[in-house]
Amino acid sequence: MALMIKGGTVVNADQTLKADVLCVDGKIVQVGADLPVPAGAEVVDAGGLYVMPGGIDPHTHMQLPFMGTVATEDFYTGTAAGLAGGTTMIIDFVIPNPQQPLMEAYQTWREWAAKAVSDYSFHVAVTWWDDSVGSDMERLVKEEGVNSFKHFMAYKNAIMAEDETLVNSFSRCLELGAMPTVHAENGELVYHLQRKLIAMGLTGPEAHPLSRPSEVEGEAANRAIRIAQSLGVPLYLVHVSCKEAVDEIARARHEGQRVYGEVLAGHLELDDSVYRNKDWEFAAAHVMSPPFRPKGHQEVLWKALQGGTLQTTATDHCCFCADQKAMGRNDFSRIPNGTAGVEDRMMVLWDSGVNSGRLTMNEFVAVTSTNAAKIFNVYPQKGSVSVGADADIVLWDPAASHTLSAKTHHQNIDFNIFEGRTVQGKPAYTISQGKVVFANGELKVERGAGRYIKRPAFPNIYEAVERYNRTHVPVPVERD
Ligand code: URP
Ligand code: ZN
Ligand code: ZN
Ligand code: ZN
Image (cartoon, rainbow, N blue to C red; front, side, top):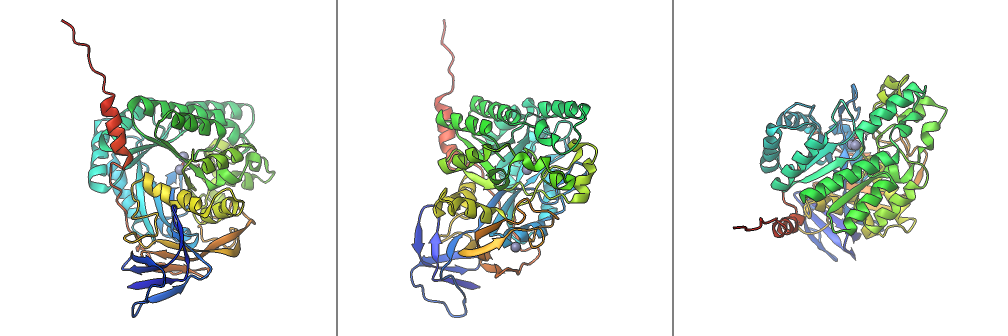
């Protein structure tokens, strides 16, 4: 099966060039000017379009069982919505219950994800610790292609990882050549503040951001970074939402530590005034953690993304509808945490990033796909329009505009946090595994066509990590 993308401008993280792209059997086989069209090839006219690597959303939660309910968006609808927005791969999370074997949870998530329409991969959360967890981590790395493990420092009495778990799991990650990642919020403080606010009569969604102020994130970010530093292991912080956490990452990087940060489209764009809306449903629809931050933090996040302190963008796509949010009618701490965006991320990033001059097109590609592919070790299979790469491509129309809305989006949720926003720049075509799966607003997806993507351990940074750690091994003093 051959697909020729004719007459477009290829935009990669490292360069922009006028070139045709030939895809055969799901792979890119030629990139060059004026390529001849092979007999029988389907031709897509990319005149006036940018030919970019499909987006990689490294943080989604399809059909997640969480806070007493299950996220409405499943792997079928969620990956389809991603394709409609130019995202061709997600990295979702396997989240075992405390005491549940990691391998068991992993198998469950693999079964759920079999209906995906785009490629996907998994981070696995470490929510508890004993030796069997360390053994399962090894199996996951060596047999299943999992090279990243997630730690929730929040959600006390549920999936929160204590410091003991962080230390054991980060150490194991180092041995296995995997990347530890953290949701950085001090869960003990959140729990304390939630109880205190409710006792004060603050039971509505306006109390949600008050229960998780930015210092709560800054403390946990610093703790995770310092633990990683002590152990000599790299670290990736998911959904960095505030100045305090950015400052910790910047400091660590400035001091030579390999620390990476992800920012969500929502945190770049929205502020915490949404929680004070008179409409309870509107306010509750924005409840996610970390919360949207007071005005000012957004600009800090943008500058950190522009300046390279933060390297990736994601959505934390985790859909709960109004009836589910209503579980917290009388107690904000019971509102299921999560917001959507897998379909919107690329358009919002282009509109706010490229159209404003904050990001070059190449930087846009870096922060929407290439950097995630590199950090999570699937580059250049993903994150690159080059010979040998998977033919996961978005043909971007910079002239077209689109209004984001729950009425028209493909996401399986009754709310859109970007409701009514008109963006300029959107996918004209999305190509997954060399097939056109989205064109002119229409999805043409096949249930189960998505493949599980294995991500090998020891990303290239590990060579340096290991060499550095070897040369810093303490030696005993020889005494008579
Ligand atoms: O509110 C959120 N973010 N829900 C999903 C779980 C998580 O913390 O990432
Ligand atoms: Zn989180
Ligand atoms: Zn999440
Ligand atoms: Zn749409």
